[in-house]
Image (cartoon, rainbow, N blue to C red; front, side, top):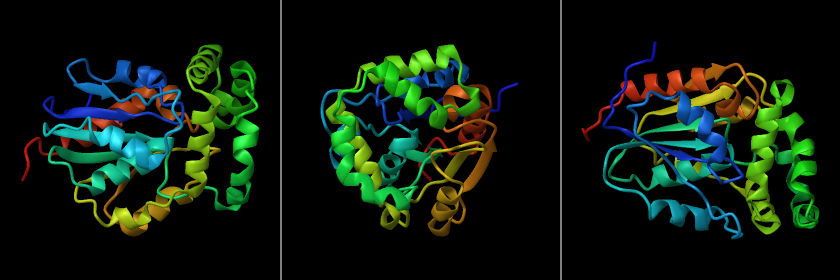
Length: 243
C-alpha cells in the first residue's frame, strides 16, 4: 500500500555522480504511476562543476509546485537550489548525501584525481573498482551492468571535475537559507557517505527528518520500493500551494 501524496506536486530528481539519470529508473518505476516525476540529466561530456550545474538546473525550474531530490553528488546542488527559494519549491529530499566533503581526510588527494580519472580506465574496470563501495553486498549483475552503462556515457574529464568538486564542496552556509521541509534518506550500509554527514546537516536543519533504510550507498537503486514509500509519505505532508 502506497502512502498518500499530492499528485500536483512534481518530483524533480537530481542524479548521482554519473549524471545520466538512468540509474534512477528503479525508483521512478517504484513510485506511484500518478506521481509526476522529472529526471534532470547532466551533460556527460562537459566538465561542469557545482556552480555550472547549479545554473543548468535553475534554468529548468518552473513555478509549478515541486519537491527536489538530490542523490549523493547532487545533494549540494539540491541545497544550493533550495537556498535560492524557487517559487514552486515545497520540500527537499536528500539521499545518501552531504553539504560538505563527507570524507575530509581524503581532501589531500584532490590534486591527483585528474591524473587518476583521466587515464581512461575502461568502464567495466571502473565498475569493478567502485561497486564494492557503491553497491556492497547488494551488488547484482543487473545493477553492475546498469552502473557500467551509466559510466560509459560520462567522459573522463567530466568525471574528474565532479570528483574534484566533491572534495572541495562546502554548502553549510546555505543551509540556513532553506525555508521548506527537508527529509534525509540514510542507507544503513553506506560505505561512501558516513552517518555523520546527516548529523552535520541536522546542526543547521534541526527539523530535518532522517529516514534510515536498509541498503548501500546506491540506496535508490537497491531499495527503490522502501525509498518510494518514504518519498510519497514525505510529499503527502506538504502543501501543494504556497502558504
